[in-house]
Image (cartoon, rainbow, N blue to C red; front, side, top):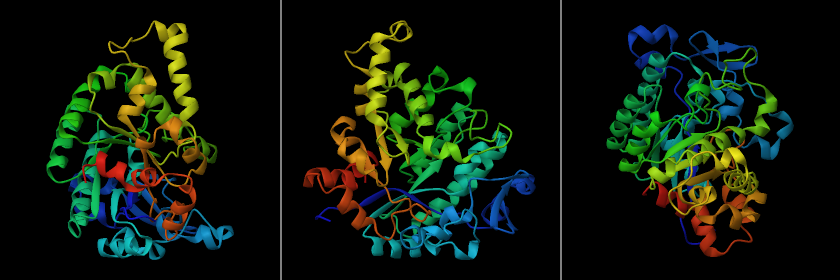
Length: 375
């Protein structure tokens, strides 16, 4: 790569097996996440439910296997095979050096699945434990490890207060559900306190894949059968609806400096989405009859100004970068998960960014993330 730094805008930690059992308030201990060993490996359980989306093979026990023996990939595996960099900060730094990554923006692993737990009080307690631990994790190398806080916004005021608390602790951003409950979508004015707090604190908010809140519908556990494989190639549906609700209800008009990220949903869906967004606003009855911007802006203009996109290796999306917006793109390796680009991140970046100018490469590989997260 050129003489610019590489920032992975989507790395992960792997929560310690006893994290919640050793730290959570005693009244929640029996319901907090714990690991059960089964025939096909270890699995997280929480509040009596198996977290189906948190198989250890996916989560970090088979890092890099897709490059050498994809035919042996499995969803299940055991903690003993988890790459140590997932839970030991010094080991993650070593892997960053091996992979040519200068800074890691850190998201959870098992924690992604916790948004599906119905009980908001339990959720807040679990997020508190996780955030405290990640703050400690980042202290090992505060210039290279940057945490994203998990925020429960069942109570928007409490969520906004927690956002401020975590900003003061050094977190560079926060996660909210990629798709909220159907009766509390992001076009509701109840979230204005949260949007205002995030804008004032300069804290980007992330809509990360697999973080549907309980009650949102598909893939959140509120339907019989839970997650299904057919959702995997269609995950971009959820952020498309959430971002549409934000834009078309005037959220980014009211909060012009708010930054919201669509993380780990790749890129190629964006051009068609933007064309339909503008078409709906301009040329459909319910679009014309809905909220009308006071500014001379199109919905796609707000997207380009206020939304950033985390991706791994969407070569087609890079070819469409002029339609998506080069300044909106942030590369991430997804380390140490099964689909991670580790340990071939530099090779993959060289290939997919091959047609980009040096300025574009610098922005996509790290510059845009540095700007959004104020690194």
